[in-house]
Image 1 (cartoon, rainbow, N blue to C red):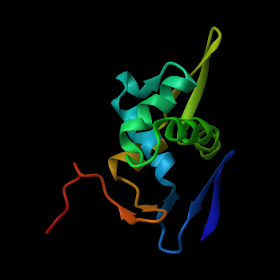
Image 2 (image 1 turned 90 degrees about the vertical axis):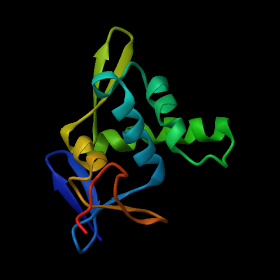
Image 3 (image 1 turned 90 degrees about the horizontal axis):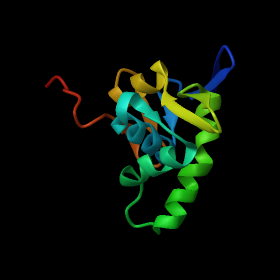
Image 4 (image 1 turned 135 degrees about the vertical axis):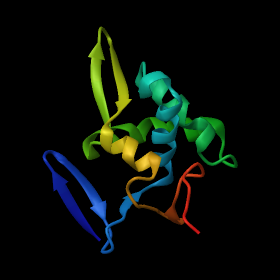
Length: 124
């Protein structure tokens, strides 16, 4: 595995070209996809959007905390973008984040293996 730098963003890439993603990061990206225009109105809203996609066997307050703390790592990888709106920081999917969730980019999910979205058609 190696880090690839694109401008200010860095991503971890495997030797075969898959992007390495943690389950908590994928949960946030999927949650943002459910929001109107892929935008959460605050960091709290962003963390809440990922709750349905994170581990169901974990306590809800611990899940929320993990999601909330993972948001800055998504920003530094360039998968989401931040915009200030008054006192809030709105968080939205970037084009790179969209391509990860849509399955346009190969994803290696840590602890689970290759990840493919359920809605993506696979040639048989």
